[in-house]
Length: 502
Image (tube, rainbow, N blue to C red; front, side, top):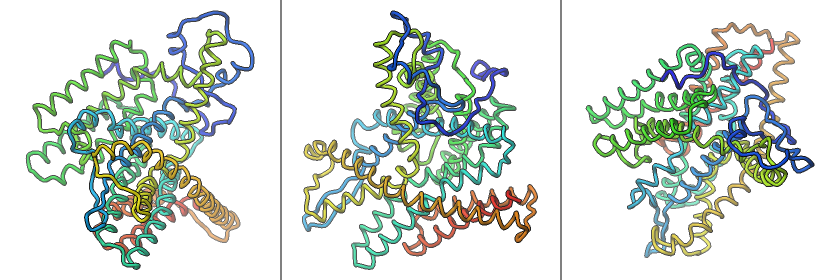
């Protein structure tokens, strides 16, 4: 484990989150050395782009990894929606693909949630260290992260709640409404977990900087302890306690990645480490109590997900030089090489930055978009092939393309709404700060009070998301209570901002 730890002399990556339009990512020295030099150094306009570097603290490869993970999740959820028309003309719903023959090995590839949290840990540590270097309090970080998640979530809950309530009032089939609530709510587990683990970034970063190996080991033992209790007691819901340690551990691996852990390892050593993690995982699912289906192991998360995430960590380290070269310039290459690379760089980099910039909107809205498309096809009388039939497989590519286009349109529309909400938020914050500065409102918030408000914002946000996720109440109370909690979360954060202006 000591060889994996970052050097004590490694300086943390610092810099701005903002990325100039003209900037293009550059390859790491390691990736540059891995490529042969052919001919003279590149000169001319074709070589200007790659020479420009990302701001410190940003990694083009990580941006692309997060984008690819999100696209995989959207594609998987789109494929798993199984719909068919019964003999009476009613819509029949179910889950496609999952549980079918051959899906288990595929699940080892498409289960990208561990990798998503690793990449998220990298980005979160970068942002927190930048804020800390400017003297920001940890409550500012927590408030900002919570608000970024709560506001778009409240917009989605409002729109979906109104649409489903209207459908219910117009006499829509209660079974279909219940199915829509279930499908829209299922992906929200990620949002609740993400709210929790990102709120703990300042605390976990401190532990990482003081006792990185111990922190990782304690989280790992916590995962095993929860698994042991669940398996011995037979109480399935005990396993959901692992939503904390499993995803915190994956986030910690992102911290390790950020600080250069494993960067100096030779490729053979990285391959051996990745193979070892996969071998232990294979042993546990064949001889042990864990499911070989990585989607099953996600609900609730288990040690199998930790091992898969560990393998993904080393795999990312293994392919990073190649990915760096794809997303950045290479010194010593000839003009033809660099000109070709510039084209690939711009395409890959734009994909990563565009998807990452709208990641939360895409994640929140892709299931409502999928269900809306299903309803449009059904109402308009288009054929809905039986899941797994030859015609169903033949229409999957057009289906995925339709989901992609519809999601893109939705992102544009919701983006305009989100900008309006953001403008209103900035206006309210500015008014609050003016009142504070003029003395009209006297606020003297001690550190403990700020901490209480920031923590409450997180708890209220998680509560609002969890209500919509569990669907234990009827539609109207669920929507109203969820929005009440999300609104309280936002107000707690905004009050903290006003207090900061004192």
